[in-house]
Length: 286
Image 1 (cartoon, rainbow, N blue to C red):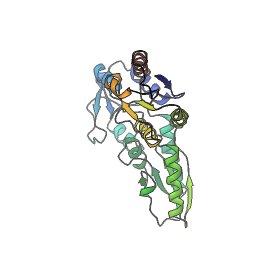
Image 2 (image 1 turned 45 degrees about the vertical axis):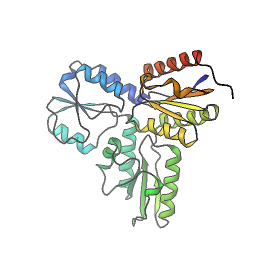
Image 3 (image 1 turned 90 degrees about the horizontal axis):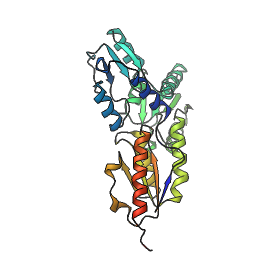
Image 4 (image 1 turned 120 degrees about the horizontal axis):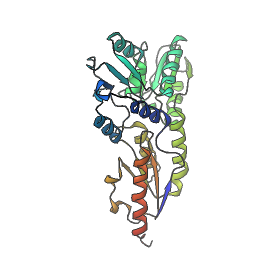
């Protein structure tokens, strides 16, 4: 059994920099994270062990700690101002590419456009974007597109949206709104694009796929969905502890990829597990 790794996978610079920022905090027990730093259980367990406090993503109560850490997913300017007005020191680890999506949405609105966000309405990143807008619309995909009365529409994307979903949804928006001037600013982040392209190149070479990353990670789930959509049996795990040898019986080539919030050491543990299995489990003759 061969183990083939995607050329681009795992932790992006936004997550790396956010983690580095937490390592500089000398008194973690004096800091409340505004939700989850990233959607990865292993990372969150480490932060909890260091003493960071964590508020629910939808919490409205002002944290009791003197400092609040804004996560890589960002928050609205309105929420940041609310925390500052309460006298909180703000430690901001917002990914620069998420910040760019906020700026793009606000630019489109200043142009007199009603803003449509392609993404998951319940996701913390999307909520942060729309909270600063007037009458925004959020659509998960082309199936949710409608005809809107405005003559000018602007479109941005949750940064972890697959390229093909953006293309299909934007085409549906234009088709449903032929009366409107529609402008798209593509805010899908380059790490997401790179991991998607690398997976597309990997899939024709494998007969099974392992995707490593948090259950709540949007981009990790999208990688797993992409594998299944291409007809490749796909196993989404958070760590090597979830792998089951029997699932790999008869596999000739197993692909490995990971979401952008997955720790490098987690990927390496999964890779070592697969390599050990490959060395001890012969492939059945066809």
